[in-house]
Image (tube, rainbow, N blue to C red; front, side, top):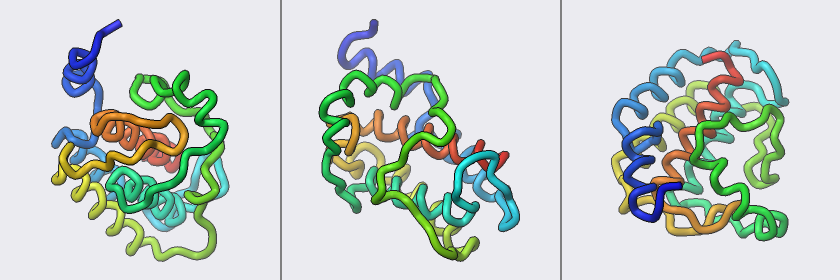
Length: 163
């Protein structure tokens, strides 16, 4: 196990996160490959709804959406915190906080542009502009854990839509 600041240095160096320029470019490229007709392999959201959902998650990381801690997260969140930053894939159809659920018709091009803008804002703002608000499930995390977790969340949904 890597201790303290060494863990942060290791994560920054070895694991994809949204503070890395090459990772940002990869994610943007994948978002640009989405089409209005892209079909999900699992879940209920269409592609535009998925991008709106990802925008809400990015709003959390940017400190624009501060959600309260969920009770079950207070109990088991600390044990699951490593899942936010490790190399495991989130399970398909994992439960979503109701505040992050998106339904109804969404404009594909608008949601695509919004998501790319929020990714650039997060990346460009870096650690200094990342939220200090606790994650609603796992609690207090570092900016780099937010960056890694947001990458994993986006990767999960982009895989959902085959990009």
